[in-house]
Image (cartoon, rainbow over all chains, first blue to last red; front, side):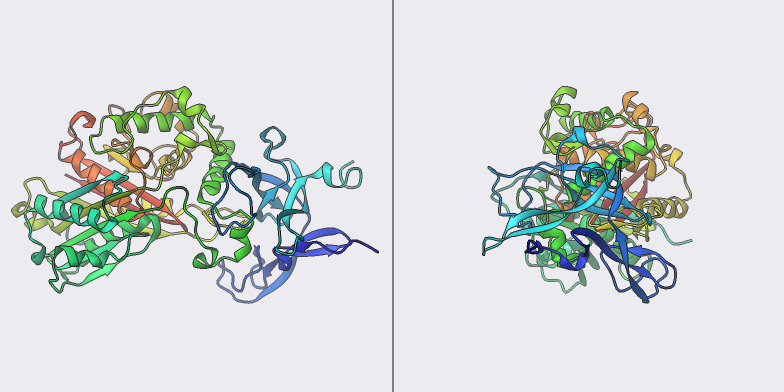
Length: 152
Length: 382
């Protein structure tokens, strides 16, 4: 039996090809502007004709920071200030040029530089009431996800 | 040409923490001080615009000042609440709606970073629940990218904070009045790298109020009225890099600060080189660096040199945040933009004591920026 699919905080944002996640957004049918998450109207050309699109699973790091303190609610990881683990956050430039904000799998400043290649993954960030892990989308340094397949 | 409007009264309840006072009480103190400065009684005020983010309806001030029946408009425009109240008060006087108008703001925030709720901002729940909806993250991400694109070193972030606390130490009503060394700031706790503890302002408490009238009659109320040459508010365009953005457009557009600043200079008929003293939104060190250029006071990338050479100090060519800005005063959202205007009025009246800008300053400038991408700019003249 294959493992059950991960429980996701935001299932509508992802599409899986096998176990590889892709980010979903939408595209303006009139001017082609791309949006994440999907939305109902185009803030550039004011059209409301939008169509779904696949943003892909690869990007490059456009900017980054480390979240070094426990966010207040609505953040719901269940951590306390004592056991909080800092996490990386970045904007990731996708093939279309859109920059998507996401958690990063590393919180080590030495491992992050603008322009580095990244690949989409899902990571657990909290445990639900029934004990199952809940995951969200995140980006990882490209070679650490699929070593040897996409990047040498 | 629209008729000039003048500020004839200023009042501040010092920013900081005042456990024994409600936010509204601090607003009432500021408003009474402004009315006294103008020599105007509350029942002569024809219209009032006021706001607070966390301390209740500003209209409740009428319960303190008196129920005179005046139109009192509650303003809720994030960090630009004060700037929006002022722009509205100016428009009311220009239109002839009122002879005397008030702009007032106050606040009292819980300690720690703000915790906005996604639905209030038209965003999905997961954005907040998974830890992406923090203002401090945005400022850090924007700063990191800006420093990268314009070749600015992280020392510049330290120098902004150093000057803010140096000026705060000269300002009797500032909250943070201790100078901090380069090493203390550079070695302070990381919050959202590259931004550290002493590079961020803190949500705080306080009140600020202005009394305004037509410039033609201003001398009747105050010997040194300050003319409002421009008061402009602008919101974001598609493609500008704003707080609470799950994604950024492929093509970047100028920030609302750029459009507000250009419109204000056009309205006032002056340029950045004419400004003698300025207040620029310094939610954090990086924001101020970005705002120096976005408001037209230097080229992108020039800031590191300006900061290092002392050009932004009280005695320099571009005196910025002479009272220590948000970094030394904290940020009660409803009052913060009006605190900026009050500091510029104080400088133009030559009442700033040890922090007075030398050389008889004639033109001042204020700039406020906040979520979800709104900027307010004023140009003031003695």
